[in-house]
Image 1 (tube, rainbow, N blue to C red):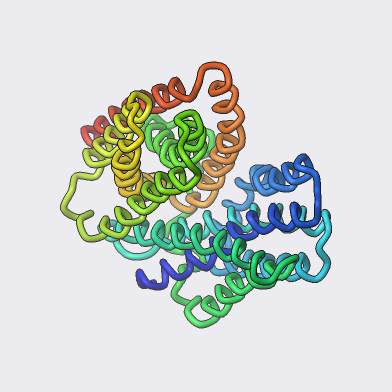
Image 2 (image 1 turned 90 degrees about the vertical axis):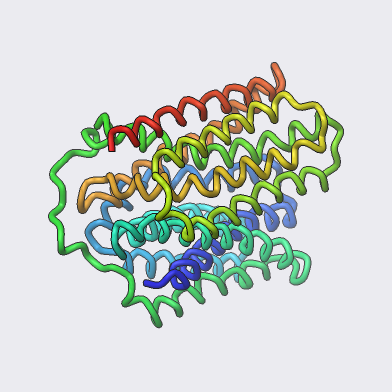
Length: 378
């Protein structure tokens, strides 16, 4: 399983669900649905996966990577074609729910698959290439949905998006044998899931696995609020968020070149520290021009830190149970992603977003100390 295959699989896998989420919103608005209905449709993409995260992880542990990848790809194609043929609130709801379910399936399967290939020394580099592919999928999927609505109008954008999971199935048919199948070389650990997440050595890794994606969710939500308060334009918001995303992507592309030359947890600790200080400064600065270099610094630290954390997360999961543990992590992460905008919005309305950034920055500084202790215990 080469780095090119890792990037291609991730990009094609994530482009479909991410594009479908945007397409559901665009099509619902195009059909004149009320904002409340649009909100419910979007919620289906997050609520249902939370209910099946752990069973989905167990399926990947038992069935291997290829089967779940093929199943999710086929379901994504079928759902998008159905939304194209018969657009309605029901098919849009199905498309939203299936986007969330397939996103979950791809996440668990790809993370477990990358963990099972190569040597331990190559694992972080492989996870870095995985996140490069994920970043590409996150970009091309929504972009395709937006341009598809303008170019084709109506439900045609769903047919356009179906090209991504279809291409994924073709790539799987061509190179799918390179993916790891059932795990035969190690027995399934008898340790219960609750014992895994309660383990003193694993808990800091679990905490850090929540901190990385939550940083992106929070940053993408808070920046528009801060920009509005500062009187900045929409293009300024796009520039700030684009700087963050571009820096994160560049860091992930560079990481495989340097990963074998650094001390894992020392680097993770320093990266979380940079992100934490960046958020605190973001809350304190008053000059809008300072937002862009701070966004770049936070993006670089996050982009390099997340692959390191996820590689450690999967590697420290019990043998034969990586998918199950990843499913549990995704379940909790989904809840955090669903609740945090509401919580941040409420705090921002009452006190402004400055306290949110200060608390988030302080939290990352605490996580940074956990990471340094991990190096000492390694």
